[in-house]
Image 1 (cartoon, one colour):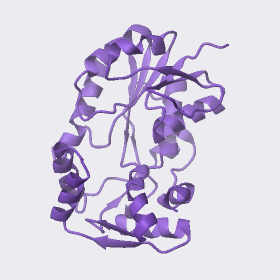
Image 2 (tube, rainbow, N blue to C red; image 1 turned 90 degrees about the horizontal axis):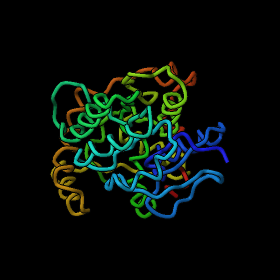
Image 3 (cartoon, rainbow, N blue to C red; image 1 turned 30 degrees about the vertical axis):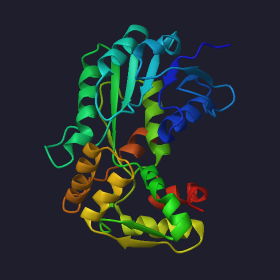
Image 4 (cartoon, one colour; image 1 turned 180 degrees about the vertical axis):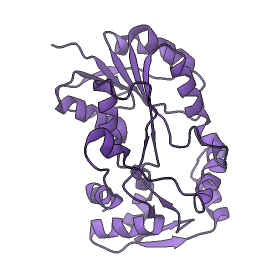
Length: 282
């Protein structure tokens, strides 16, 4: 059996799972870091380990050349030990960062502080590196799925908030390019979805994809804060996310063609994402 040479963390998530599938389909030996049982493509090696326990990564990193790193925590605590562990075995890391890193200080900075620190640690590690900086994930709208299934409506703030949400497959395509070629070494590409799309329009497009109308019912920010707290979201996340989103009303994220420049294929639209995930909302 060929020794896996790329380790994918976050392999059971949307982006990590897409990276695993693309590498495997291309015939690239790939290993998935998992914490428990996982549904992976046949032939993909799963090795147990946990980024919260750097000592548990030794087996997963054995013989690995490159790592796709997804950081699952809201702080950089413990990240130094993880980067050190990677640096002892691998030569390259591709880090899933955020479009919010590197800009001027603004509301919601707490969301990106750990990304900033991870980028710093990786750049200082001596590893070859790429830091992918995507805009908001289209897959985050899966948080509306239960509401849509049960009520046919989404109750949320900021109906006019327009973002270039990016399909996880587009992030994965760029990540695979960074993992398997030298074209993005030392780069921090800002990658975006195809176009700005308001939350109200996102909901309408999900409705079109599932074949029945879905309403957007706008609520006040204060009510949204209470909803998030009641749902168990950490206070620091609640206090960061909504002000950051509100700030985007007047200063929306940029839209660019980096996905197409890097991969040769244009970024997918939110309409395409909704069609791809229609079953999740039915």
